[in-house]
Picture 1 (cartoon, rainbow, N blue to C red):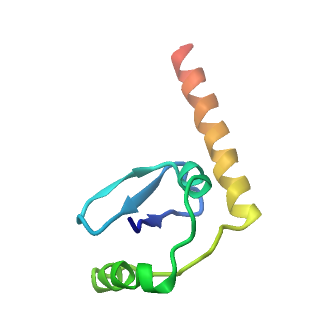
Picture 2: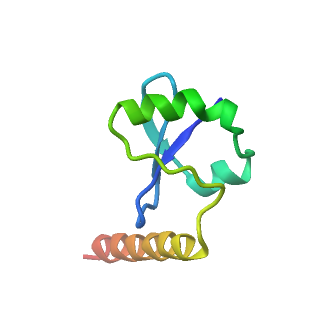
Length: 88
């Protein structure tokens, strides 16, 4: 199965998209750790489908350490915020 990850720079949980036409939540790091990069021939149809839907597509083999750091920092911030709100 080929999946597109639609992640922003501050994404904690990314959106994923498959040929079923459905968006769903995806744990980016878990998906990357348990899969392998698709070959161009494997993702070409999904790439075209998303581009035709208006997405600005960029193919990456991996994210940068900076984006990974931002994602982790945002997770920590959201967890701290949730704990703070629970104690009010």
